[in-house]
Length: 386
Picture 1 (tube, rainbow, N blue to C red):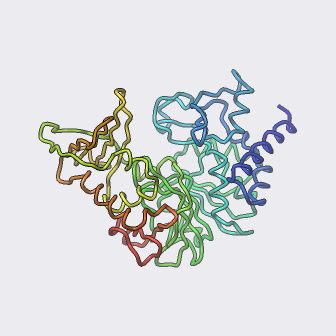
Picture 2 (cartoon, rainbow, N blue to C red):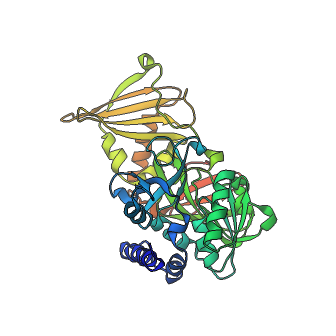
Picture 3 (cartoon, rainbow, N blue to C red):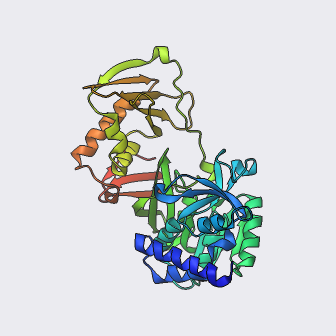
């Protein structure tokens, strides 16, 4: 592969991102042209196409050079580590724990950052180093923190090959890096269920924090906050799914224990409606049912189940609501100190009463005491502290 051919693939990628609406700023596009993605890709990995564009697959530079190059310059993430290094990255098995993020979502986050020349930027999650390199290309003073020493070591090598030299640190990104504060921008390339207040403290008033925010299993949003010293306030800008900040990982599984003691009732609310009404309802459910996860499941017999559970508590409450063809109402099974389906019905009713708001009407306030979700304006709080 010649430099000219690689550059042509890079330009074709950015052309596709621009056509899709993911890339609109000339400055971000120029940074991508000057920072070839293949310099940050491992020789093997697992491609996960974005936006459901086909199944995932193994890529190998030596075994299938054309397939590798096509994958690197496609709009898909490439898994570079599984199970914190204990798994095989180019397999479908194991939990993804580091990746080369999809170009489209990288561009969208960089545009949300609204970078200015000479901004001081703190990046949480170096990964392969590609985003840090893009930020450095945009004339910023970049400090990037990576929790995994082995991932950080590879990022150092990648950045050297790309001739970029941001400040790289190994440590817990949840704590930020107070020695380099204040920052004009803080950007996380891993998701958080709660925005660490250390990031707010280390952002200068008027500075921005841009992060994937994933308080519920299966749901994530692009969040941009503006800091003001004692708090940060902002809105959501579409969906995004990322690997969690290691400090905030929690077990998320449905455990129907003591099924013989569970309560069975009927409901007229179709569980498919809850699962398919969009992320505006998901935010209402998050506010009304704190700490709850939901798993939609299409069953082999043509029925559908919505499984609910308390995140991080295998011994907690659980519920299921089962849709069956031709039924006029649906069976609900619930167990535990909480009635999770009842909470969901209440959240659904509230959401309808508010005019079925989409995610663009919601925002978040982060304070030292916690997070407040709000609708339309920060004074209109939904639920309580999270």
